[in-house]
Amino acid sequence: MSAAVDDDLWSAIGDPTRRRMIDLLLAEGQGTATTLSAHLPVTRQAVTKHLAVLDRAGLVRSAPAGREKRYHVDEAQLARAVAQLRAVGALWDARLERIKSLAEAIQRAKNAKK
Image (tube, rainbow, N blue to C red):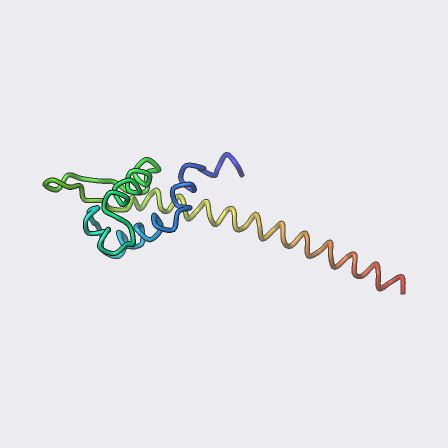
């Protein structure tokens, strides 16, 4: 599993402000650091730094728009992140099911001894 999980991608997504930015970009289709900062409790400069992290992870792409850049979500990379999350979720579901089975077996053994 570890080879399939992109740590840089998850580090970028791990920040709540960046997740909110992705949500805003998905809702609006695109945005600039200025338009995004109007919806977030951080400065435009902080938004620009967050966008750079998302860009390095491949989650957003930019195009020049006058003095600013317009950003949009790279849907292929986002789909890759969703697939990774599903894989990790399935792995944890399997682990939890094994733990449950072990706990039930222990309980049955205790009940059999009574």
